[in-house]
Image (cartoon, rainbow, N blue to C red; front, side):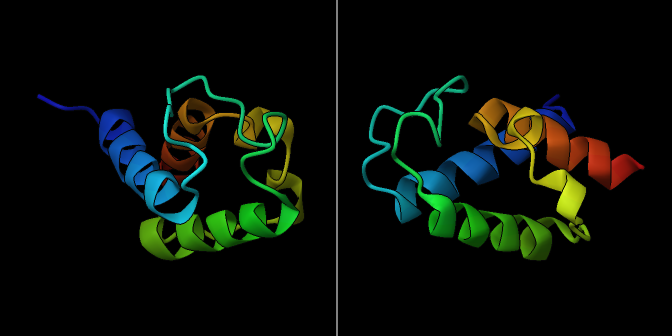
Length: 84
């Protein structure tokens, strides 16, 4: 059985690959901001997508490296917010 984090990751990965072609070698641990593939406006688009797709309300405190640095962290953040 596929767990929620795996489902979330698959959705996030598909979005990132479609929206940011520079992420052609995307891995769970790929650095999104540090690697330069996603700029600040792209990150805002990503956060809006996450809010709409997963039905989570985003707050200013959510925009942290711990939550946004990699696709893997994004999926964990989505799952944590979805269950809290």
